[in-house]
Length: 378
Image (cartoon, rainbow, N blue to C red; front, side):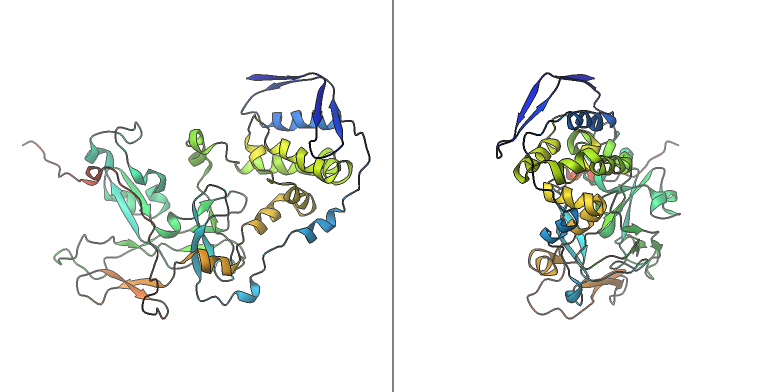
């Protein structure tokens, strides 16, 4: 635990003529106590003295300053699914829909799933103890989440599910897609055919829309809270499900509302909100708040979730220019005998144009992929 002691603090808003004064505050801080974030700022806000009067902001006019992306007129896009830079800062790539999706609609085409069997045995150590480096750790699925039969493949089994099982980011408040079980068949290839083992029999893992999704909107899934807690050392304090409610409660409180809409001049309000967001002792509720004044005011009017929905939509022209189309091809049984499954064009693809993007994973240690046969004495 840490203790913050502020005595006769004077906060100067650098871009305004206003001075804020705050009496003595003594706050005990515990990093994982989400209430500290609220209590600290609530105490400051309740004791602030305003030197000059300001113009009152009409919260209902905040929307006029925000251009909400409207792709409905372009929803006849030739591409139904894009991969592009995520709307989540520092989250890498994400998946966006190029067309309107109704609840329960299928998203794209089903994805293949590759069983990862007895990986500790083949590498002579424990992945959990970091005895070896396994790149797919970030993308492993429990077998029971992918197929009811997959765990019977070996003594220990994980699953790598490509496409919607690997690329979408997680946003607990905006979850709008969910994967289902994959199918199992060998595409007519028998144990005696030369193609057996060259492709995975687990395939066509579908993903469905959990709600109505607008064209250009990013697709989000649920990684589970443990995924983020286990990676806190390098991902930071990513907000979990309950933290969003705490953040919304703080933003909707009378003290914050009055400061942002009535008491502070524009520049001073912006400086104050920057101070809130850049508060040095981070917490998950703090991470759930809008990152700028305009979005914060919009969040007071319509709720933080609606603001984040709007910010998760990219214009279709942007996706066409900066993204890559994911659904130019669809899987199916190959026309080549014994070859298993192949890729088929889902629309006309002109000469020289892109067939499909292929994000790559770098395996620095190729030996981690070697599989050894088991031998038994006697």
